[in-house]
Length: 139
Image 1 (cartoon, rainbow, N blue to C red):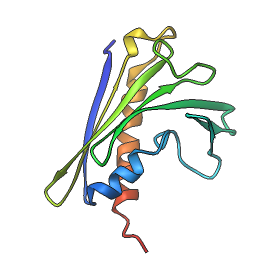
Image 2: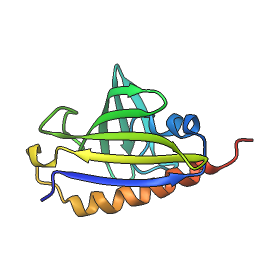
Image 3: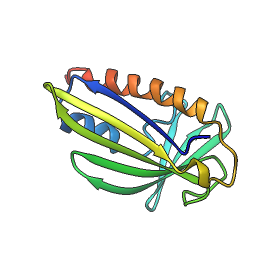
Image 4: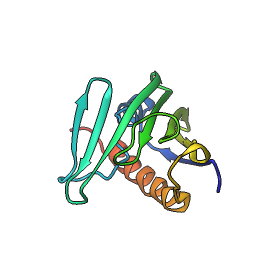
């Protein structure tokens, strides 16, 4: 198993708009009307009631508008090393838009086995969705 997943996508939107999206804790966890986001102190809980799951996300670091990182845990786990992965977003202004690079790492340290193939496919979907959201012209 690989310890990390790395993906990137070019977004035709200013870096500040893209950062506003990727700096939101848990934005990458299934978006939709059934999704509920609550905060408990520094921890963000992303609940998917139709799936009966709640994902804890803990912000780690931000350097606006270029970098944001989070600890992302599986349902029932804490957002700490050993039960979560580190999700890092690095943004670079490029060709009139923004290059978004995501690295999710720490799979080898997880105490619960994880299939990175599903996460790899998930990041490809989430980055495409982020591109669509960020490229919408604000009203």
